[in-house]
Length: 344
Image (cartoon, rainbow, N blue to C red; front, side):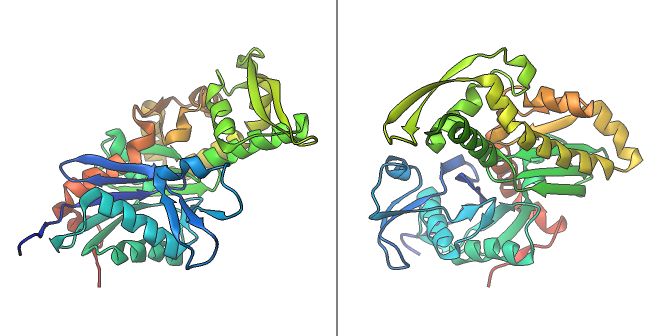
């Protein structure tokens, strides 16, 4: 048909903070914030911005505008706006004029229930996918790291994103044991913000708390040697701009319970590991992926607490979409691995 062409296979990772889309033969073509800005409230409110173009509105827009985040803790909480968001990104990635609808690999958190899982599938179906392959984020992240997930060896992959931490023991192309927790980068940011409010009475933006998090030299409290970071925000008592010097060691102390919760989830999966695979884990170690795994010194803290070597992936923040993209590149092989869901 004139003006139409074959659609490429694609992979989608709809994350709490960012949505990424991989197109076969091109790589990652979309990596934008999972956010929308509406003028007003309600279903009929006009859309002002989607994705990265929303940045100028965050923390600056007046009450006339609504900031919408359709995905929280890795789960779709606003289905209609999530569908709009996904349609916008897919059109940006591959256009809209195709004779055949695309085949899609979509990554989802391992802790979702059947209803939440179906919401991801429905959202992808609504954008016109003719076939959908669902893969757990931790498994996709392991593939994206370059690990040999289809071989008879044990691999312990820990994906620490913005909304969730996913831990999976993988062997021979399947997940042997897994666990997850809705604690990750966003909770760490929130803990930093709460500490600053309680200790200094200063209110800061999400961007500031995230910057503080990655400015730490080492999340192990005893390794920071009281380096000082300058924090700028709003004095909660006067409402005036305010600057405060903060010791990095106290920030580490504030986020320590959150980090230990993440380590507890890893320990739970280790306790479920069959003896035959324990040797592999001890030899190969734990593999960290996800943007929040780049927290300075987190790998060393896990080694100290668990006594197992830890490696951080080179492109930690993009491992999930790269792994899902690898599956999209080999879509014809997926039917033999698991159920292939055909869209209605």
